[in-house]
Image (tube, rainbow, N blue to C red):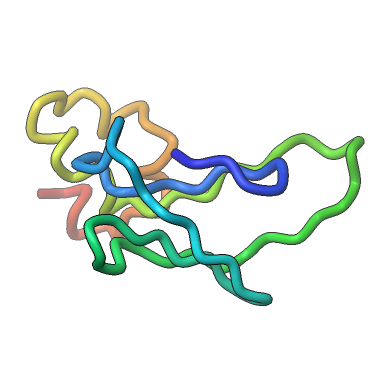
Length: 89
């Protein structure tokens, strides 16, 4: 996860603890590592300091983690958006 403007955005698990670059555009964030685009997220702009921070997940970023920890699929927040065919599998 990276943090930008009080919100957290997922990156692929294979890039944990590795240097990345964040390119900020008006409507999106682009995460780059090793000279290649790793992922993109819609930029969430919320200036209110009273609202809780948001975490924006892409379930595909955690597929490598599922192979090592299949129980994470049952309880992991990133997987709430996972399509049903993948859940059944």
